[in-house]
Length: 336
Image (spheres, rainbow, N blue to C red):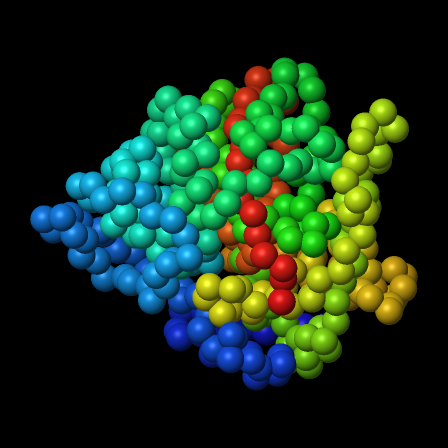
């Protein structure tokens, strides 16, 4: 079980199709590696050194308006970008700006927006709806009744209960989220960062034989692998579901691994004991820093990530200060 030492060279050149995996037409257009560029306003249109062929024609577009310019800076060579000089409330009102932000999301998978002061719950819902249908459902506990804008509050001295293990949100759902946004209302003066990992790159580090072994497999995901049920709560009926171990991104066509230590129990038809060493090998690769980006939280920061190809983990290193976040999840598709 060895990780290829040449994946960085493959990442910074055109990504080649993974011929050792079951090649399909949808796998022939993987996400390109991030390159720095500046988006500038030219009259009512944009010019940039990066573009995307996706039109997002199936998504509703906001009414046309004057298009603001913004700057984009990749966070790492693996994934993530920070967009600055941009008020997200203008993006809601501008078709062109919304399309450019969607293109950046498709390319970088994790977007960070700073200085987004005073975003209301209505604003957060409108921003999420630029990428798909907002979903009124839980973060981890599968309970009824949570609002579409879910407030996460941690008081001083309290330990976090969820999110501090690598995971893809709600992979135990038949249709896991497309992604989610998280908005910092009140954040500690230091610490409590969020780390993201490209599951496309994790797949690329595997040897051809190891990846070929995983290609036909499906894995069982459970909401209650690491979370105990509350006997007083009402739960939705999705204790277990199985998904392909390697899924194809529906927009970029890129293959990525879709397993995580929080919710993935075992491979279909293979016992937990037999699955464990294989899964643990993959989970160990996820901890490699060259496959990650790390987001430092500030008040009024909004982060959006693609749950289909990115795993994430919350860092619990400061429990002395209050933390208040607002979260919105976006409905996803059936992994294929």
